[in-house]
Length: 547
Image (cartoon, rainbow, N blue to C red):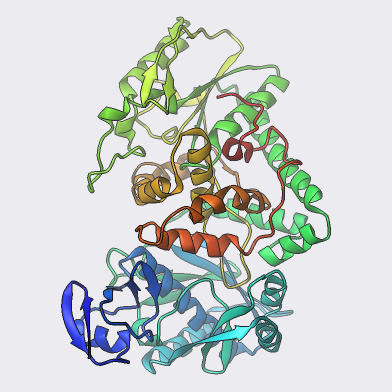
């Protein structure tokens, strides 16, 4: 017998007892997906050792929700192959309100409601049968051979660049697949989902993490969906839709070409936005977006294009209107909530804006992120006849800001990092992950924060974004996608040492390991060819734009 602590309860169990057996005894109503032992996520086939502290995880936990989504994607692809055959290609394209937009591709095939319903029915049968999902640790060459046999050519391409000698594949029925992270032990707990037609593909609807008995709400995000389509077009232009394809370009010595075309696509979109602002005669440009979306650099690049059009842009950062750090509001967990609109001195900002629009001279503040203080150092601004205010910040589209300015004078831009790249057809790259890596690199370079601090504050960041930023994205006149297909190849060089510095006894260690495994799939490239005007320079340094 061995003694463990499971969900805070001391238990004595027989040696070789699995976590699945222990979980079944703990709580019959909760469906546990994986567990945490000694600060590591483990699957339920694992056998704990004497003295282990075990925390079981369901889908209400962030890590549990990832396992739930990942496992259901595996079930969906297996079901689709059973209905349509092994020669189809299932692509998990992007996220829509925590749900996934997917497509099924084959020459001459068009998805319809009847076929989608057949796939859903087979998925329900697989769940009802509680089929095992078995983990197999394979040698790299053996993994490549199995991927070829499964017609998973995108994974063969990706595995070509793996440096580890062993690869974990998962097996469901007779189907093997490769995923970035743990799976459930069997399918019986994956009961809540739906498949709904959308355009030429379908939306994979998951359970709501906060209310697992309910499905996630699908909101109308027409403008954001259009940007995802634009991103797909950009991928075709670059001939890069997966990390394997990106690595192929780098290995062929074409990294410079990828950088130049990616930057040109950004510049072309910026020119179009500047032309529209000029043609409409707008005087106040409001730029909003979540953290680490590149708002600051975009505002300066837009200002350059407005100058080309004969206007005189004046850039203002909402960050300079942060209240002093000691007075920052706290979130529900007692942590500083920098993403809250209450962290901004809205009254002072609106007063300064009204005075500027009235032609008065206004002393502009500057926020010192090292000291956490707003400072005034005699920097006065006065607007002329050809001046255009370019205002950027998290809350740029919040109705509480610039509320006294007529809509006919305002132009709203929402900017976010909506990556057009997937690890492979079945493993998508979350936009949140890209922004998180951008931020931990920037926070370390320019704000004196280590990676642990950035990871610790991230849940608060995400909560604040969903409360204060994303609700206003569809109010924008235009959405700008700040993702660069090559950026993680450069960010990894900056981020990996910061992540390795997190100790294995720290709560942030689990997330650090997940990000390190994710970044390991990218070939690294040096930043020499990244132009000083690039949005990426806002995070790695070397920008020609001064904040």
